[in-house]
Length: 130
Image (tube, rainbow, N blue to C red; front, side):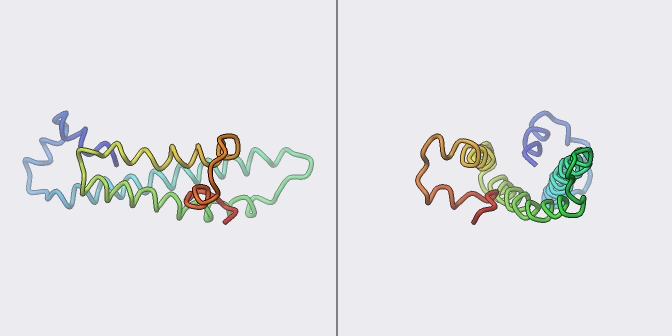
């Protein structure tokens, strides 16, 4: 989604703007592509883990691991929605949207080490222990 402004500044969308395509239609297309790509990447990663774990001695059932896809899919959709709002309202400051995944990684993997307060750990969209 964050490629919309950079593609427009680089002139790659001039052929599209020359036709009667509205900005809302173009924004919707980038949003749909971002959503589908995000969910496909999550699905591919989850399915890859499910298949890779089948060689273990006590392997989990693939359907059980694939349920985690449905657990994380809303978090991906929330992040894409926030990025869409930031991109639509504050296009100059679109890099602010990177705070969400960076905070998620810091909170999940380094939260205990950095001694984050408990309330900061609870606002992470990717935590499963809430």
